[in-house]
Image (cartoon, rainbow, N blue to C red; front, side, top):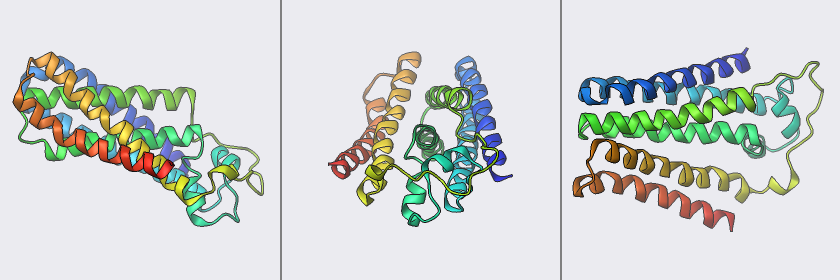
Length: 225
């Protein structure tokens, strides 16, 4: 049941992201009114994707091998840290981690960007929602991480031994936080181009997000080396 809940949460996040992207680009001139709705949508997207990611972690930690992903990349005798890292030690799970970080940055802008002009904030969140919809749609329709395996095997195939290292367990989330964090800079750039707000104020608004993403990327590269 938890797997189905996670799958539904990801689908719902995709739907909200799609509606937010379309609505934001159509009504961005409404300023703070549409920005308020998009802020709420950004937070809701984060909550839903977190539920989906949590469902995957629960399946790996409890060795639920009815989940194809867990059966293919986990084992009941693995240490807990490698059970958890097994979630993103594959293509499907790493995509969900990618989406989680994407919506996390969108939610942070929604929470801490209240002083931004309403039209600019609406365009930033609309662009971020468009990216979320694209990646979530790809995950749902072409790379489903919630596929079931019937009958469920008694044991899993284990994680790739190359990935069973504490450094490589921490490396991908940090690296993803850096890579995906720059999506916010992209969203600010699109918003500035559409609204015509390319000035010193815009540079001040985008600078903290650029530095945060750069820091995560530096830490990720350091861990990978």
